[in-house]
Length: 413
Image 1 (cartoon, rainbow, N blue to C red):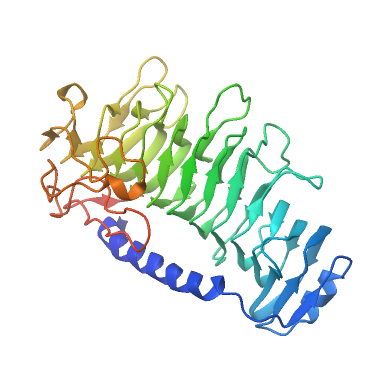
Image 2 (tube, helix red, strand yellow; image 1 turned 180 degrees about the vertical axis):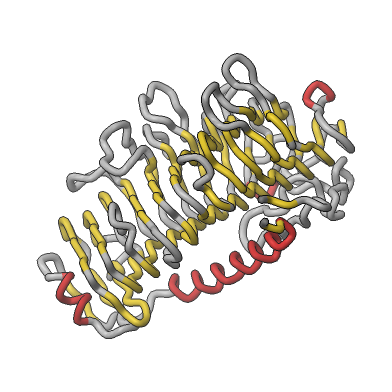
């Protein structure tokens, strides 16, 4: 049995650790070695001392395959200038490699073997070209210590063209993988982040303009799809979503999710901005702000496991609510609770201790930045949560989110 009450402390500690770690890797160290196109990177990196920084002069390095490189402390591979070093990357059975400020046409880390540890992909651009589609594919397996931070995935189309899956960031078996501070935008026919398997932390990412349109592949901002009960405590926190068709799509066998302190902003297409919890067993949806034109649909399709035991607390909903769906979507089967949420209209209200009022944000009725979604001191819902904080998100971009307290007596199996 898993106590939810420890999660606020856990998330706070993780985010603090990551911010300190990111400060350490973002500042470029002096180059130990500088190389140019044509260099044998497998040999150079294998021979590099632990803690070295290998700088790559700008240019097209083609397909770079790195195998069986293990270091006792990180070796950093970084562009000598901007993100000028370009490559199609394969990394297998390696340890303690940091790839910083590069341009990737594709990057496969541990896929399909799932055997990378302490690998970081940071501050890089993913683009189509050089025989690739701009996809990052990571396969874990056990405690890995892998990090994806500060990268940009813009306008990427997978749509059947990816050998790894439908996500521009495709993850299998994430366990303790941290996906932090990335930007996923610019349209394109692919999910933003697609996850299959247990665990993972999706923190403070920016999603914008990921719309289904005429795409044949799913275009969910975050899609989680797995075999029954294989996802264990996936944590989604501090993210900012705007103008997307489906902000969250959790399908067919996901359990013990935590969705907290996210901002689900407005969309330009009516009925978009969907949050779909279909066949989810156990979860927390707390301290989120939702201004989408759709809201949440929960339940399961015929033949799938039931959706049960999701606790919705301390959220703000504007022109959106929590629906049990209809037709082939059968709603929450049991154990879902709704407490201390704010709805701007009684037509959306649900549960106990709800507030029916229009919230006042510091950024106006439709804020244009994540920071603008903080409630004013005179707003309905200010200091109105079960933990005496504001209803809605407590994370406004930058720094560390104030984590919510657990609902009284709530446990996740």
